[in-house]
Amino acid sequence: MYKKTIALLLVLLLAFSVVGCGQREPAAQKPAEPKVETYTIRFGMGAAEGSSSHIGAQRFKEILERESKGRFKVDLFPGGQLGADLSMMQGLQMGTLDMTMPATAPIANLTNTFLVFDLPYLVPDIATADRILDGPAGQALLKSLEPVGIVGLAFTENGFRHLTNSAREVKKVEDLKGLKIRVMQNPIHIDVFKNWGAIPTPMPFGEVFTALEQKVVDGQENPIPLIFTSSFHEVNKFISLTGHVYSPFVIMFSKSIFDKFTPAEQEMIRKAAREMALYQREVNRKQKNDFLERIRQGGKNVVTEIAPAERQRFIDSARAMYPAFEAKMDKAIFDQVMAELRK
Ligand code: TK8
Image (cartoon, rainbow, N blue to C red):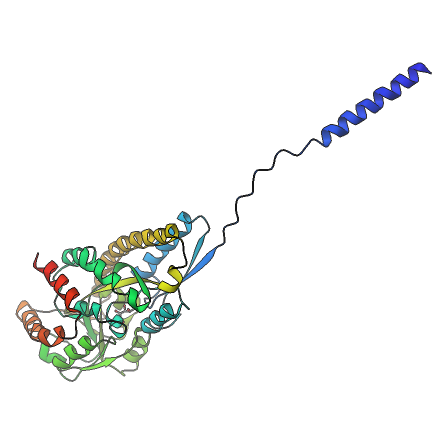
């Protein structure tokens, strides 16, 4: 009997020790990481898929999603899916859209500070463009958007604008006479083409291809990367390398939304935009050369280099218009840009 009691006690002791192990106090739980609330940034643009703008925006998305560790997600809407430049900028002002990236010309509908970039033949080359955009004048221009409810983050590149049309080769100013040319919604672009004898037709970018295809207008003007990625060369046989305006793009954020983020989050967005800007300009400059070569190789277009003497006549006639345009400008910013140009 005694032996049985001992054996029973041993069995019970063994059972409790096993069960006890199974019910070891749970290890102290690590405090759970605070759950990050993800904000989705909607980024609309007029330029098509595959454009340097869209490729640059993909880099912005990659950088910001990685650096913010889930705080920000970026959805891209190229090809005017969310509307025209002007309506997207109004979306930023109302806080119904987070980001867009228009050319500077339509900004004239919100403020006059960017008009300086619409002066034909003002910016002589890419190096000067970068110096202005990345210097104090560029910062003053970006800051000038805040009173109209927009945070200007950085400048990307649309590029030197060239003329395309379906009617005839344009070698000199007089060849523009009577041509219906789509221009951006901007008073200087309208006046310049009128002074050159054309019939300027202001129109949002998203309507241009159809208007060219249906011959509602004879031609339009844009940098080579936009002409190619929007297929304008397929409906406009004649391409004249006028290079009449250097056109930047502006990466913009809705101020009412941007102001809700922490300073650290705002700096993350600014840094990603600055990195996007430098990358997009690089892509755009490569696209310009590659696409012009593909157009020439395609053999379907007449590509006209403007002879130096005729180019000088385009320049002289445009510069004669400057005094009338200066009156429309923001004087402080105009003087800042002109000072940069004289360096
Ligand atoms: C794209 C436009 C375009 C501009 C134009 O959204 O409207 O011709 O050059 O790049 O901003």
